[in-house]
Length: 286
Ligand code: PAF
Image (cartoon, rainbow, N blue to C red; front, side):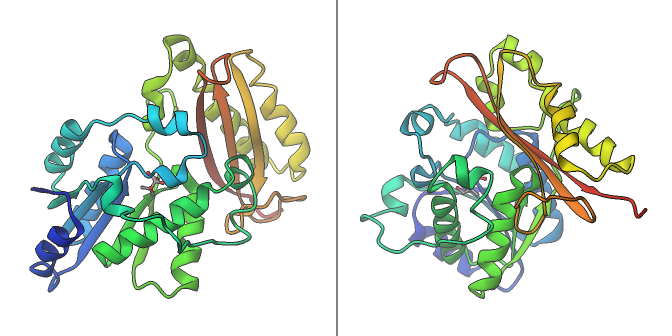
């Protein structure tokens, strides 16, 4: 497996692989079992897999969060190699943004809710860097985790609306045995925060079970789910029942919905860890 730092070098190496399919797994590093599942899936479905490791400054609205983001290139590269990746692309910030960026990708509507509301500019940063990476790698298929369901919806929409020739594959969330969704941020949780973190998934499961039982009123379901999240160490930013394509909250449940949550764990604003999770639920027909 090769570790490549420059776009020029990457393009050169990829030109020898282009007669077969290329899979792409964009990441920000601090890789865990969720990323391993993405790499594994790409390696199974394509001839060569490129993993990018780039902590993208333009998608962080809090510079402290960007600074604190874990950077673990050596162990990340070892994981990529062990799961069969062909190339790790690990560019510097200067390589990706050699000059102040003037062109951006803005995806409307699907970005208006949930993460888009709480993290202004986040999806512009994500869509722009993913578009840049797609132009650099030019993959046949790209793999994204369903844990970031809104990000996946944004990328799907961008690719469709801008005719980007890549197939987007969503890969199911990988969870710890107690249900906590794998995330690079989990390693920043204190033992006390880690102990209460599975409550997020329990709240999602409770909401999903109420839908399965035939309850169709999102408000009553949300209220009951939120009653599991009263621990003072948890601050819920949102718990919403949304339509899966546009991520807007629904008034009545009559088809597939995504139940999405974001919460801060920890008692201090600056020291808290923000976690997100979601589940897709299809309501049974009456
Ligand atoms: O999901 C992530 O890790 C990032 O948002 C991505 C897609 C690699 C873009 O920086």
